[in-house]
Length: 74
Image (cartoon, rainbow, N blue to C red):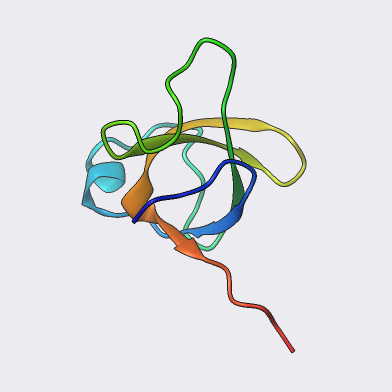
């Protein structure tokens, strides 16, 4: 799945993110926003992207397969 810069997704760790677990990796179900830090490759490069929390706190690099679209709530 391709992701877009600035879009909000729900993080559900896929096998790559489970195997390469970091201390700052978000918990499953966390809402994150795709970002593009200066000097870093753009989103979807080699199936990865950089994310931040909705509060603007930088999380790091995650696999694009771990990001699920957020469904609109009624």
